[in-house]
Image (cartoon, helix red, strand yellow):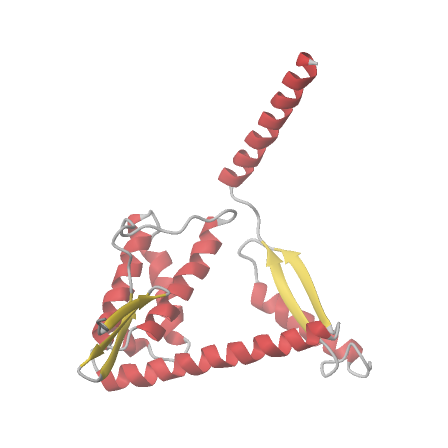
Length: 218
């Protein structure tokens, strides 16, 4: 029985390089390169979330700065090849690096600088996990309230801020609805894309056609 020095697990390539842990994003060779995942609904918003998630995955998976930079370029090319503009890619990549005011990290090849940047993202993911557990506790005690609203590239951040401010002012003394007694989650409902709308109408038309055929046959 032989034990190898490398393994692929959950889209991660893990290898023992002479006692040093080496990791990077693993791309399945059986899947065509530079393809975007299939989404239903508002594709631009969905792929915005995907690109940010893929960049976070890259910094968490890639142990070396060179592997991270290659993965970052690969993600940008994937969006460009699939018809998204350079402005779309640049906006999201800048947002990713500016989260820690680390725009210089975008072209950096210094491993020590990258290690610091990487630890910051590990801390963020740990905080997100802690927040998720806190929300689950509120939900278990029926103290989690979720509101949804429709917007299409509107002033989402301003709406969230104003909503929370007004809620806090009105219910700061309430035993349950105060900031300490409950948790509020604001989410948005996106408008469906034209392709999704046409696909839905096509399905409705097919169902109506089948019903008409069945009625005629009977």
